[in-house]
Image 1 (cartoon, rainbow, N blue to C red):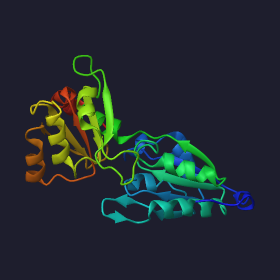
Image 2 (cartoon, helix red, strand yellow):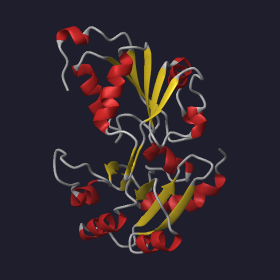
Image 3 (tube, rainbow, N blue to C red):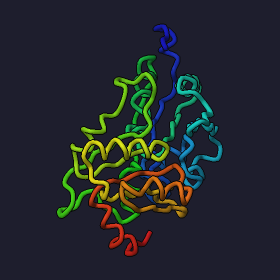
Amino acid sequence: MSRTGDEQQQFIGKVYLVGAGPGDPGLITVKAKGLLECADVVIYDALVSEAILAMINPLAEKINAGKRKGQHSLLQEETTELLIQKAQKHAVVVRLKGGDPFIFGRGGEEMEELMQVGVAVEVVPGITSGIAAPAYAGIPLTHRLYSSSVTFVTGHEAAGKYRPAVNWQAVAQGSETIVIYMGVHNLAYIVDELTQAGLSPETPIALVRWGTRPEQEELIGELATIVEKVETVGFRAPAIVIIGSVVKMHGILSGLQCH
């Protein structure tokens, strides 16, 4: 995607890549809320909660660019082109993403492409679901008795990426807690890879669906049994997967929380 020097001077606005957080409106940052309230245009993703969308300036143009498995409102290239077009006409353009823009949110790709054509861009970090969902489920990702290291990894990889696949053996051996985004669809494959890499079939695992929202639900098990449990109860995405001994804390802490 390229523009001439003249075209690069036509942008009157700025694009803000804003993290909406995991869903609970109380977790959005003050800066993000302020931008939503004064935005001219907001282009938002599918996982942004209705409570967050309600914060948007009522006079703003709102565009759903949401991506869910098998359901794409806009292609990535179309979204970027739309941001470029809106920045030519409006002062405050918000690209609103669930969680954090730079954690499996394609924010880095969008920012790079926008800056290449001369659009001013600012990133506003958000609380990522990989941290918030376990916390709301009573699962601390680190704990002095159980874990001093965490790995964040995607369970759904893009075609044509920098390398063909996640090295699950390295992930299994690399840290004591594993947090997987978008891992439900490929859970059977992931569990098989991790057990082949040396993780015990008895390793605790938790799935947290719609983390931090009123409809949040959890499914707790072990690597050996979790796939069957998912099929039995019909557990579906979107969900965060947490693997490791810290999951044992769920039974202790989950009932003590007040949100």
